[in-house]
Length: 91
Image (cartoon, rainbow, N blue to C red; front, side, top):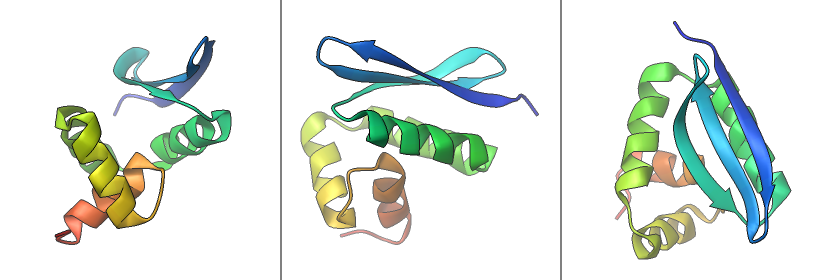
């Protein structure tokens, strides 16, 4: 299994979180808050590969409006919580 890691880069409009597996970028998202990017990166390195890969693919398919709907439903600003809400059946 490839090692997981993440990198956070400061941007003019927020913080870019790069999720890495085996040194390769599997996801790149922009977050307003550094703490949010840090929390998601931390969840990433502690997660399950199969479920996380599916969750990242699901999140990347959503447009901004649908992302906001799922984040609101999960009552969170963390995509991992939106994914878990979706897995529980959502709405």
